[in-house]
Amino acid sequence: MFGVSEKVEPRKKCCQPGHMGEKGWTVSQLGAIVQTHIDSQPYPPTPRQVARAIGITQTALTNWTAHGVTRLPTIENLQALARVTGTPYPEILTAALQDAGYLTEGAIVVVEQTQPTPATQKNHAA
Image (cartoon, rainbow, N blue to C red; front, side, top):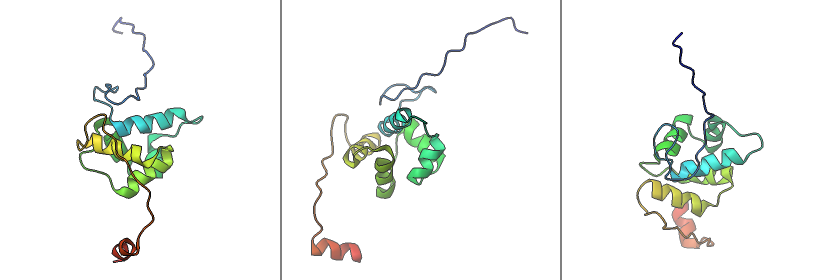
């Protein structure tokens, strides 16, 4: 009807943090981790399935991936994201801290695994 024919290019997925996403916003560090996980699967899960596995809403996941986080997600959500994506927890924590503006790009978080002491066990039980 309009006489204009356009070739529609397939959407290109961007999973590098800092690059512009398909809607013009910058892809977050957490978004890059989620998208890399989705792209690496033989039968890619939907964002809704990933969100459900993490224990958050699809809207929350979309906000994390498109805009980063404005406040840190719960430890449980970050641990679930690490488990679901197979990404080491310190990498997830670093990404969340960078997205929230608490760490500058290039900074990393080092997490030491320690055995709980009786004092810390007592504090967690309270």
